[in-house]
Amino acid sequence: MTERNLDFDRVVNRKNTMCIKYDFAREYGMPEDVLPLWVADMDFKTSSYVEDALANWAGKGIFGYSDTKTSYFYAVRDWMQNHHDFEIKEDWLIKTPGVVFALATAVRAYTEPGDSVLLQYPVYHPFSKVIQDNGRKVVSSDLVYGEDGSYHIDFRDFEEKLVTSKAKLFFLCSPHNPVGRVWTEEELLQLGDLCIKYNVIVVSDEIHQDFVFKGKHSVFAGLREEHLKLSITCTSPSKTFNLAGMQLSNIFIPDEELRKNFLLQLNVAGISHVGIMGIVACEAAYRYGEEWYRAMLSYVRNNIETTRKFVGEELPGVRMANLEGTYLAWLDFNGTGLDAQELNQRMIHRAKLWLNEGKIFGEGGQGFERINVACSRSVLIEALHRIKKALE
Image (tube, rainbow, N blue to C red; front, top):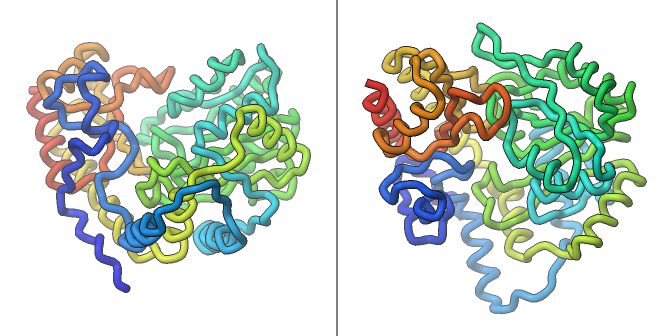
């Protein structure tokens, strides 16, 4: 077989496919004719090897209760070892219906109602939602937006928040969504030292680990032996291979006691198995999807550079934060003189664009918009020109 789905310039029509991104504008209060570049899935067809594996399985005609064999673990293990130099053991692996589900499970497993959970605003908005919805308190050590266009960690503030909040749990976003940072090994070690010092469990959302354009992704749990004992590492093929609808994530929990408590909460939630099609898709992607992945990554990299160049040359008053990882550009419109409400209205009604308004990501997000650049370049260029026109 050969990989067939390498034409990323081809615009795939996703309308009338029950797609949240394209088919639910009215339900989300948006005009029907907006161009959607908000939710973080790609507009590319996945690897043809995944496509074929799913079609072959569908041909069996039976979709009963299923689970994974050792071959699935080997596929996940090899991907993590080859791409991230992180060696996992089979008993560490727990499958969940998604990373957000795993975050909520961790909140219930390791904290009590009223406890504090630490995060770093601005950050992926379900982080705070799963904390609040489970009756816990959100505490943020806000990231600092530097003159260099990158975000940085205020380690003094981070330690102070750990102490004053008595947080038992820290949600790490690595690479960071939406600010695009790929944390250095030194930064992660410093965070880890503080969490070890104050006995804080780290839930590390590493779902974007395969999208790194500057630096190197370091698996937090793999940096020190002590990190293994306090880490829950959340991964998934969903971003890498555009499989979010398959509802499958791979969670690694090395510590036996942490794993036991996590599994207990899965049982409480009534989760005993994940869907067979997610299993099939993940194993096929990790075994045979390398060519597609490399080509897609190169295409997205060029889209990022296209966006950076356009913002710098055509959008006065707008800055693009340095995008080291993920396929989500974080655009700062604060230099345009528009307040956040007017900016959002212009994006929706003048540009006819559906982006993610910065304020949903918490403190520091006012005046920003998050734009998904994992689409055909013609669509991206159209969106950028719409932004320019809306600002004129």
